[in-house]
Image 1 (cartoon, rainbow, N blue to C red):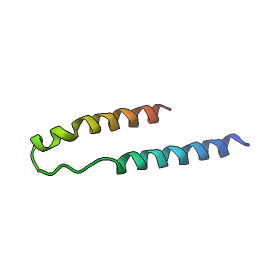
Image 2: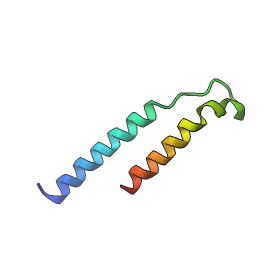
Image 3: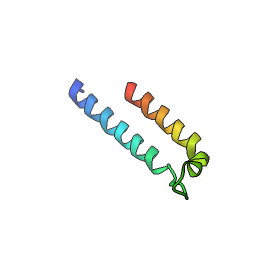
Image 4: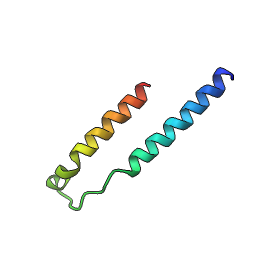
Length: 56
């Protein structure tokens, strides 16, 4: 397997993982900052996971 093919495969896998992570985020039911409080831990976990995958 060539380096380019392995790189393309890993890019595809990471893109699928990031897409699945985004689909797991829930939309808040309000429009103010207090409505973000229940989903804030999930959002922070998503950001940290995205950073980790970006570093990888």
